Image (cartoon, rainbow, N blue to C red):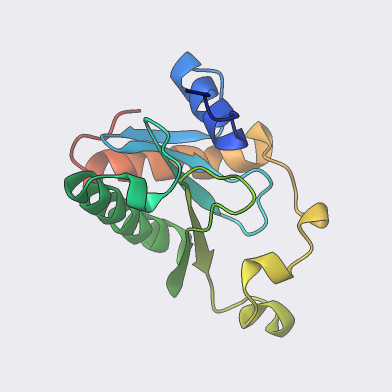
Length: 155
């Protein structure tokens, strides 16, 4: 049987396992929470499953429920810590065919042109890449909040 071609999600999870991904927010029982790179919106995060699976429906019912529950629980943390009015959640897997969830904290003060647009309509090429100096404090604040709010989370 042929092994699937590793995706960016596979490579990112391998980096997280190796301790080399600086965007790590926390390890959860279902996978990893990381800051998005680039930071197309301040606080943009992803939930990456571990082990990596092709899509949500590849998980059994208990694992699927756990992944979605962790996504929503982290959304609560993200909303509170970023002062967001809501969190936009997205699971596609069309470009990178491996399960991963995008979480976008949406705020009252977004420019009108962006406020009603979905994030893939934005110009991601002008978004700032992850920077320890710029985004490290937010990552640490999110990490502390996750450790307080989500049982089983690890730094």
